[in-house]
Length: 223
Image (tube, rainbow, N blue to C red; front, side, top):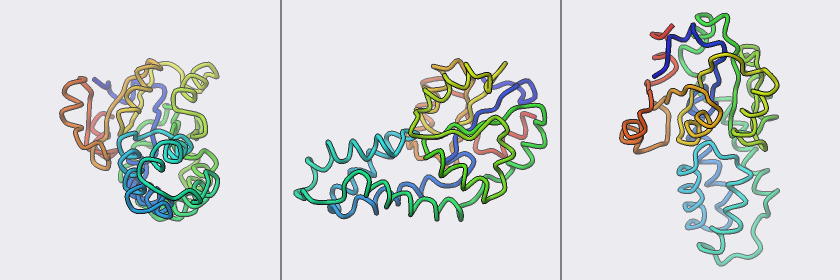
């Protein structure tokens, strides 16, 4: 169970589906980038993406080219990894600049003035920092904004050593990978279900005894 948020020295946030309503933005971007290989291949990538929430685009597109294209497409001269990443990044950045910021985020920042805030995301790190600065919320994350190509496991391990994550810490995520990464790093965890693409989240949270709330606004009751 999560504790009263005032008791945490560090709050670690996933981005997509937690801070930004961007899960659908990224799902559609994966589909559009993969479409030159045909509808079946693009749908297969979407299914893989949703099933592996929180994993970086680099790993997903590599899996797409190595495994899904041979299984689902006869094309041999479609876009390569760099071209897929570029197409995806263009679509995603536009969507991230327009999608909704989590209601209650500003109030939660004000209610936890002594906590260090970090972003630990599967999204591209440079892209995240640009988007957060453009949207005026970068300064809220005084512990840093981190993303791929490093994995969440790598980021959490590094920031624990660096001291950016100190004392009692809570990871706020919306994927099974977020939970797994938080457990590996020794952080408490709460699952936000409202924007999540985990379809069996209720059964999963019950089976794993995972704490859950609807969204960021719902976390305010713990302050």
